Image (cartoon, rainbow, N blue to C red; front, side, top):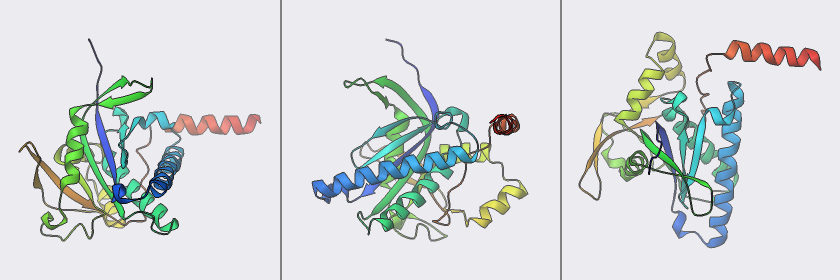
Length: 235
């Protein structure tokens, strides 16, 4: 049987202590994080005049969190999405009166294959998703040299995701200035050994926890702006 795959950024959010919550609180948390994700993606896509489908090709619920499979056209944005998502979920939790303990985020660049599940809904599998999940096995005590993360609400990214990040956002003076403005920092690489004794190279990234970073502008952004102008004049 033939199949197709996306080779792209994959982001995984994990709600800390979710399984210890009562059924009612799990329900409230699931609704809250789903709403927060939808709100965030709406804001980020609108900020660059893109459709949500131009940024994300799918979602996969894990029960205590979810995967976001990015569109391959924005591969490299996964790290900024992970940081933005962490900000959004922490803010949502504060608004809910600390309904859950916190959130861990992983970001990886790899393969995800879509399929139709038994309920007839779109779902995904793939080695890229498995590797992304391994990133959540990082321990805060493994963070070297620059003292991040500051708590359990970390963002751990693979070496592959960071390489894509640098390709999409070259470290020119303007980008370095922007990263400084949002207090972006990363740890030195370290290794995570999973339950199969396989090693994965990763690093922690950190920034201001109120930050949400827009995706890169599409190549035809000027035409999209002109199109909006024409529509406004005609109404």
